Length: 295
Figure 1 (cartoon, one colour):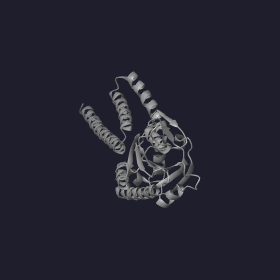
Figure 2 (cartoon, one colour; figure 1 turned 45 degrees about the vertical axis):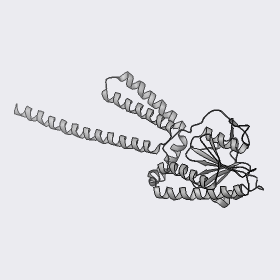
Figure 3 (tube, helix red, strand yellow; figure 1 turned 120 degrees about the vertical axis):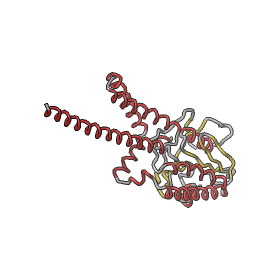
Figure 4 (tube, helix red, strand yellow; figure 1 turned 45 degrees about the horizontal axis):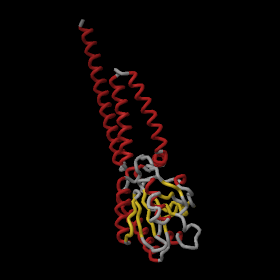
């Protein structure tokens, strides 16, 4: 009899140890999930992206809870299928960002994922200085220009009527002035900038339908691209008057001085890069109501 009691006690102790270990692993699991969720939310600063991410994480949590309860097998199967479908949809929407993430993980550049605020601030100051100086010189000489700054919309060649010529060069005022020189074949198109790099030149942008009678083609192009993509801005220099303008989210601020342009660029670019060196996956918000023309 005593042997049976000892055996029961031993099994009880083993069960308690396993239960305690399982509980600890579950706590670790929850902690890791919370940390990953926090990192994702901290990298997102677009409202639409935040809504999508919240909805997706809610479905994931609901699927985990139903599986953990083990009382609703049919509901669990349905939610699992829904999570899978949403995962595939988000993978298609965020393929550019996911590709960038895989490249960073594969090359071991984990520090880039966490970001270096001091380096980003230096990049921001340099970018703003180069853009402001170039825009001021173009304005004084009345040379028309269209400069698109991608703040996280992940602009791709298929987003334009004509993607222009790939440049992929370090941003500098000298290069910008050369690209918009009247005797160059690329001066009629737009220049696309991301970070401190000039991505492409001679780009043909979509035109907005608003203010057709009030604005020229360059201003309509600036409105068109910022209407379609929330996270990009466009600097416009009028060829007729040399007026400086800045388009942001389908709104045009004009005329502005060089100092005002510098303040706006500092605010918008710094707000974008300070949130993350690599933005969390976000869909490229495309709005309707634009036409495509050659500026």
